[in-house]
Image (cartoon, rainbow, N blue to C red):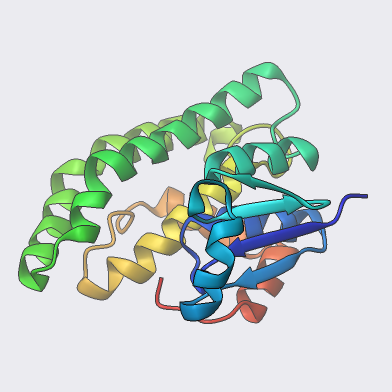
Length: 210
């Protein structure tokens, strides 16, 4: 069995989905969180001088979604067929699109009042088409009462849960949680949060702002 080290900042951010995959799979790994001088010391060793980085038996791999896809395949979380894998890939690409088209603008806005206005705009006009799409896909599988695809947990469930968690804790503080008002997704969130390994990680993981 390979040994894993995951390098990132002391935050959920771009590494949290990889952490969730390994926690759900029951895979031991070193959760290495770097900041300040420690990050500057390690930075020259990292591919592209950035994080997250997954080290597998000494080999360092970069790019968060490449790491996610590798881990999902490695631990049987990419679905039970090519069609399930396609639906999972589709959802992952949706979240990438949301981030690049909407969230980065909000995240880098320095004026707090303008930031809240952008959150409100995103909640009211930017996110609803995506929520409608995600709900429709979820309903295609067991009328939305189970997992995103198939009859067992996949990385799609973890990705959707992680995204909802992030929005609730970031935008929800400003009253702008875009998933608010979707009982179907609210129930889905609770199902994933109740998975034993995920619930245990929620209690054990370091508390961070992001």
